[in-house]
Image 1 (spheres, rainbow, N blue to C red):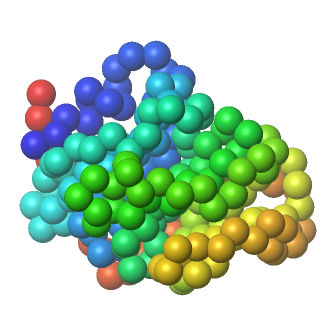
Image 2 (cartoon, helix red, strand yellow):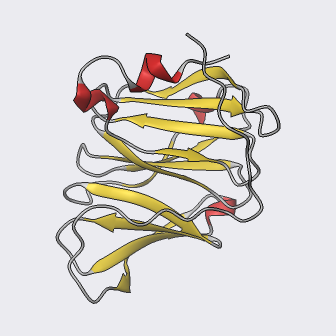
Length: 175
């Protein structure tokens, strides 16, 4: 089992900034730790709530923050603050960290929340009037800058969408 207090409630508070997402099939969880520059992937048993099999996806890129799974749950997309790179990982590979592929780089300042709606992953970037997007996320992803015009300037993040077919039990925490 996994202790959330180890990763979420300890250390420098800046280490706890970042996003956590559950794959649409309910089998994986990804967590971005902005301050410690780490991204972790876990198995998730959506019947028991047990989180297990921690894998470090990345520790070499600064400021991981936004993350989202493809609709088919094969890929996870991570946004980094180090010049705003977006990387893709194949989560079903035996060693997913070796599958890192850059789908976009040098995109500017802070990338906020990633949010998938249907087959499109929307990306918020602070200070502009557009959402960027990753289309074709199930087959490797295509980055689309200024994909959707917004009425207002974006500050931080996007609202969370709870997937109707995913109703996991409470997460099991141990000390």
